Image (tube, rainbow, N blue to C red):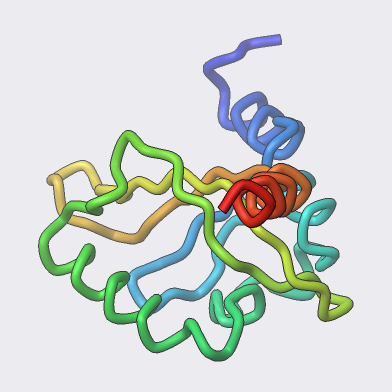
Length: 137
């Protein structure tokens, strides 16, 4: 296998065991791998071209889009290099806590063309930590 080929890259993107989501400047999903299908319950065909709102809880959308637009304008995300646990929604309506890392995507001229997020389900860990803190405090 030629690991530098577009087909190999596509296979690796799809098969990596974490959620990988790519969105364009408008926040429309342009790439969604099997890890995302597993985590959020949506098949790629269900979300391609749709807004990231499909996984963002309604009460968090305004602040999400403010941060998204700010990152696009500045070309930077304040979470670069860090993992952020955030709320998300599964297709069946369940609340999730997802450990996400974010990055801005740039074209060959350095212009920001979108954003990418890599995530894992952190629900069990988050809830256990919260229960421990409540018990201690």
